[in-house]
Length: 140
Image (cartoon, rainbow, N blue to C red; front, side, top):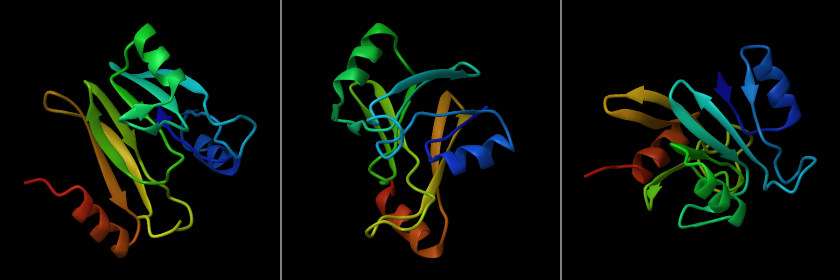
């Protein structure tokens, strides 16, 4: 199963490749605050468009997580790649694969099983974005 946040044309193209689970964004039919849940293997995913930030999630996300925990909250809206754990919750924003917005990297993200659990990876879609992601996610 693939998980994507994107417009209708993106969803149609992805469905030609594999099953897709998605939420509408704020420029689609909803206000962008929908919450959808899906499991991929044993990874419980909460998918939303507008979080807005891991340190201050939307009330609907907080309420949903209290009702039923998730292993990862995947979100979009900001177009800024994110891979953070806050108060025991993993938040992952793959970034944006569309046209460059502001000075943000153009990227996609993957979530895959790793030793001891799950790991997120951001992939820059051009050289400038790769360099930006290396600086943003450098570990010491």
